[in-house]
Image (tube, rainbow, N blue to C red; front, side, top):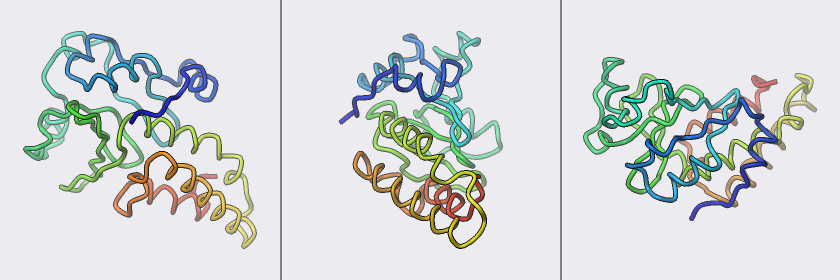
Length: 190
């Protein structure tokens, strides 16, 4: 079930240039709820996630699924069950793709042959990015001492708890979110 997120909240948090909206022509293959969400709320970008959509290439917006093309352009082989999926963007060191039939989000970590579930749907991805963005004040700019480390650990635990209220998928050990949370705890993000 999609999380209700107000488009104006996403704009307030990420700014007008920090949100990518997907045009209606690209929605033809997407799960209906996903298509509506991407055209109304959009996908935000920040230090950890960057949407990948070439709006200048109209033919690309109407063409075949992009995940297979993206993986093959990098010399890899796309898993057969994922050949119809679309690329949404990049999260940390992973390509992010969506299964257009059900709206589930997957991560394809850089340099690995396997992929892992990332989010139950796009609204969970956006909600998690909002939580991350709003939590920066609790983990950035802290000293690299025991107190700073403890504060970052507590901030990560609060973020995980808030994210789990919506979707536990990002909290699995093979998710790129786990690596991000480890890096935040160690002070690598501020």
